[in-house]
Image (tube, rainbow over the protein chains, first blue to last red):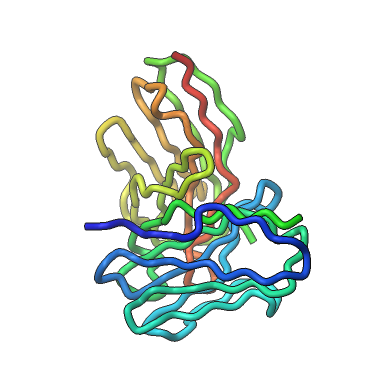
Length: 115
Length: 110
């Protein structure tokens, strides 16, 4: 069974640009969660999608958005990039929504650098 | 906000030694998970322990949970260089998502 796939692996953007990251969950998983990881703030929850609907959202500005397609693949978008958006963005999949009692399967992440 | 806090922040040991890292959390939980992350990669689930369990084993891993002290520990026995990674505890957050601690960076020297 293929794992969680995130593309691209690395991305370099400049301030003010926008970026779209992609995540393909494990086959059969319908929930995709996104996390931002920085040295200063650690792992911060962005949002979760299940059956094409956003189920949970973390404390991030509206510049961060996402969506999920009918095949459970998910994308997240960051508009008007700021230097502080430089981070490793991780997505994780699971069978159910709000699955705090089951393990998450993580992708390798997208390393975003904003110059 | 982070629910769990790992201690120590960094740990360096020799191959073959045991490594112990601790996690403290603030609110009542029904389970706690441990994850490992190799540098710049995604997290890998290690073990989940439920609130009615006090100890759980998986291979060279031993996890304990003390709900009265709101703490958990992860013991890795007979460490190998390949165990070098960051280790995170994760607890259910208020918004039905996992909240991760700040992590312990483990270095196992050959």
